[in-house]
Image (cartoon, rainbow, N blue to C red; front, side):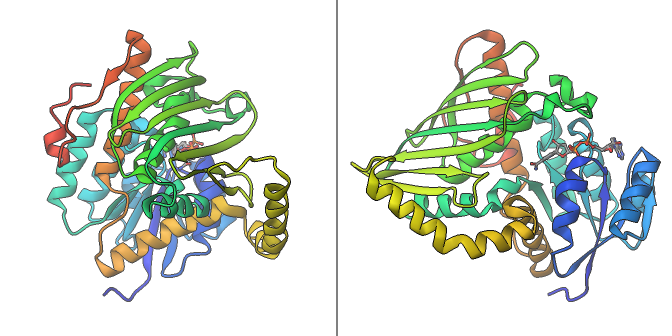
Length: 364
Ligand SMILES: NC(=O)c1ccc[n+]([C@@H]2O[C@H](COP(=O)([O-])OP(=O)(O)OC[C@H]3O[C@@H](n4cnc5c(N)ncnc54)[C@H](O)[C@@H]3O)[C@@H](O)[C@H]2O)c1
């Protein structure tokens, strides 16, 4: 087991780094952020100063040349993920790549080949929602069979991000990874696989012309039906409901008390249900206040994601969310995009491929 501190370099210093990764990384033992890089040199300098990071660069190649960097976080816009991740592996660094893994399946395959060449290095995809406290609880309940066979999942992920003055250019175009299907939907495409332990089978989708709002209907190989709605031009909501033959879960990721389980025959508004909810919220209040002071459930999820990455490097153990998972989520997003274009359902595959190489027969 590796004992020394893992030294991290971050490439890309935009909003996800400033608002999520760096606040979370301050809470992760065994890892220290030693360098940042951004094509915007002023931004790299400002972020380095704000978070007490000793080195900053404008060219990511300079960061990769540093012998003081063991691992890299790839946090540039999606069209550069694959290129920066491959260069990082070639420089001998472990890599955590923000979602989406890449913009095409061929890029995923090149990355997979590259990772296989540098097999001792860890490569993880940053699907932070897998470490969100409420998603962990939901996955646990589903996998232990508490809801019985899952029949239906309904998901909503909306934000007002497109209405912000600092909305980045790359987010406007689907070709550069922008739009609700890629930016928001990608999280749910991964979460559905994570929660249900099943692959997507068939996808139908509709999208507003600019791609800022999209709806998706999907069937999973386990038999569950899925309905999802995503928008970048409205209020903030992040909700997942999982319906099984023994009851259902309502998970609202923006509420500290956002995990509710209902049995068969139980109504959400009944007096007993309301009292139970109130009692649970009161009992959990001290924990909620503590968590909120530390940045809330989202920063905590990022911290957990980083702890997992650190453990994988130190113990040489597998990552929970690897290239294969990144590729699978991308397959669904691409199939949804295709469904929008052809205005009909798109079938992903008849039998899931056992590995990424076999899946590369796909022709997106
Ligand atoms: N996990 C999540 O929930 C989550 C949330 C937000 C963003 N993201 C993902 O994180 C990535 C970054 O998103 P963001 O919101 O921070 O974007 P952003 O546009 O705010 O920041 C991107 C930064 O990368 C820099 N950059 C661009 N090309 C570069 C290069 N070649 N070398 C170095 N720096 C470069 C830009 O100057 C900018 O500062 C995207 O892939 C996005 O999808 C994930």
